[in-house]
Amino acid sequence: MNVLIIGSGGREHAIATSMKKSKRVDKLYCVPGNAGIAQIAECNPSIGVMEFDRIVEYAKEIKPDLVFVAPDDPLVGGLVDKLEAEGFKTFGPRKNAAILEGSKAFSKDLMKKYNIPTAAYETFDDADKALEYLEHADMPIVLKADGLALGKGVLICNTLEEAKAGVKEIMLDKHFGDSGNRMVVEEFMTGREVSVLSFVDGKTIKTMTSAQDHKRAQDGDKGLNTGGMGTFSPSPFYTKEVDEFCKKNIYQKTVDAMAAEGREFKGIIFFGLMITDKGPRVLEYNARFGDPEAQVVLPRMKNDIIDVCEACIDGTLDKIDLEFEDNAAVCVVLASEGYPVKYDKGFPIKGLEAFEGKDDYFCFHAGTKLSDDGQILTNGGRVLGITAKGADLREARKKAYEATEWVSFANKYKRNDIGKAIDEA
Ligand code: AMP
Ligand code: GLY
Image (cartoon, rainbow, N blue to C red):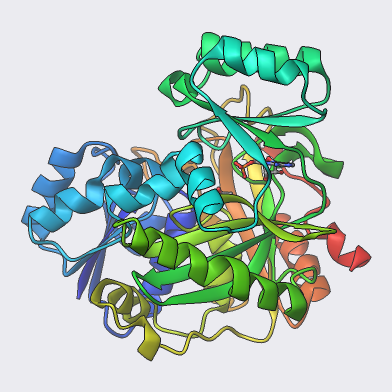
């Protein structure tokens, strides 16, 4: 088979790496890809993920047997529908199902209607009404821009003043563009956060091993929210009891709710969960693999990813026995100093060859590119996702941090406490 992957980050490199292992894959293509993906796939860096017509044109040229759409923007924008209409077998939710991630108001209303546990909330289209509501609300409180906002449209406000400023930022100043035309105001929850990703074929859901992300830029969960600075899998806080609760009250219920709404979901549902003292609650849904969750979950998956993707498309996921290795993985992101605000890029990356031939170590490229003379340069805020597998989380963590020393570039920055929470488990 020839497979085309849409996307360019560490997640896409992890997906490509999994597909490369499949006996069924002859050739991989990626749009736009990055310097790491280019080592295992033919990349077309001139096409952007939102250039649907050009993607279709390219697909007609290379004739892939399967297209995998990885990022949120093209999924929410309807790229899967567009490719399917042209006859391409495509993995990912259609536009009417990707709304599960594309609109926080939609997902909250769905959870309310189908009794899926989540934080209490109100939705506002009008800034004055939101301000009036906030005058009487308990603090802290959470404000969420309705639409996609690069993972940054969530504000946790400790005081009424902060909340008022938040309404201005989201609804009036339109910091997150049209995503802020509507806003969800949500009860603040405390607890342990866990991500559970799952494959879904419209009816059947198979969950993957759990993971935990570190969203803030600095050690001790300080600093600004980022796309994710590192992950570990499995989460020791995702106990059997939590799993049983979620299986009963969250996972299948979500899939059935989408089907009942006429929005059959095929692809990946990412459940962002908060394990509160009242039990697990849904923080958010994503309609795709997480980044950098994919970098710790996929290396532990035993199945051929192509078999699983096809089963999702064909509606035969009930026939798949989804299996994960009985070990652990940790991913530490090497970023450009200054990320997520302002940073320089274009620096040569040295030491990448150290990962060659080592089965337990992965260097997933996120923001990298090839220079005209063939050097690999930094090309983004998140540059590399250094991942290692170990017998347990402690060993995986030790190995991942060791491997972060194998590579160097001018403004290399990382958090030093990825997976530290495992010491508290
Ligand atoms: P989201 O994009 O909805 O996952 O929100 C980003 C982050 O904000 C989450 O990973 C949580 O850390 C935090 N967050 C979102 N909603 C809540 C909530 N209701 N209570 C507490 N923290 C939240
Ligand atoms: N790591 C969080 C996300 O991909 O949304």
